[in-house]
Amino acid sequence: MAGVLTLVGTPIGNLSDFSPRAVEALETCDFIAAEDTRVTMKLLTHFGIKKPLVSYHEHNKRASGEALCDRLEAGENGVLVSDAGMPAISDPGEDLVALCYERGITVTAVPGPTAMATALALSGLPVGRFTFEGFLSTANRSRREHLESIKNERRTMVFYEAPHKLIYTLEDLLNTLGDRRLALARELTKLHEEVRRTTLTEAVAWYRENPPRGEFVLVVEGAPEAAERQVSAEEAVALARRYVAEGMSASEAAKRAAAESGRRKGEIYKQLTAEE
Image 1 (tube, rainbow, N blue to C red):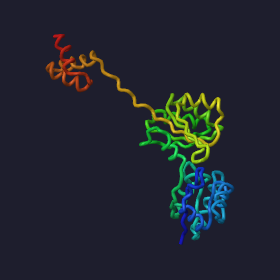
Image 2: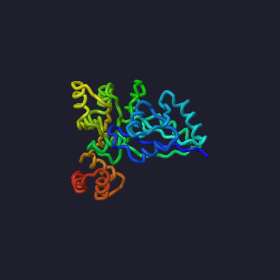
Image 3: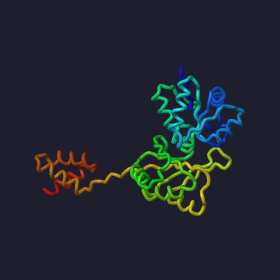
Image 4: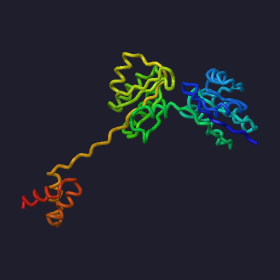
């Protein structure tokens, strides 16, 4: 009988956020696949857990993924963790989950902290609808295409960014999206947690003078709703005049033009009949 792969969310900062169920999952599995075994070893040591660790990351995911699935098919139960947060979210674990499904292996999860949801909750921006954009590509063409594709996105957008690339990303966002409100969250759940609520223009100026530290989550305001152009009184009367020419009475033409233009019927009718 095949084993089960369990995705276990790990703390994004404060180790007290690790749930009893997550500890139990690590204690009862046969092996733990980790993005960085050194980081995971610190977590295991803190909770007094001793389990075999297997390296699974972006650069070995193809070969390692197949090997892990072989073990799961042989009946072992495995746990997948990332360095921080929920594995498979902007993480190579996404490929392992897909591979498990292709091979008929059951996947389950022990929910845990996620930087994305935490930053959204703290942002103070509208979060009823949002889109997770992850990390922007470092390749110029892919990056440019990504930014262009979200230029008119109305939902709040969430990005992850490393400190050494933050200024570059803020400048690109400002140049492509125009000035927007945003919240920059870093060191979430840690001693020096900070959520800076500002605008893209102000953020660029601030971080040029204050070198960023720590991993960032950017929560960026969506595009504003395009204001509808108001039809002028002259345009509404011209519309009514056309309807009269088509055989409508002045009253019917004014009523229809009002409905289509948003202008008042009386206003249109008065100008229309004044021309007679």
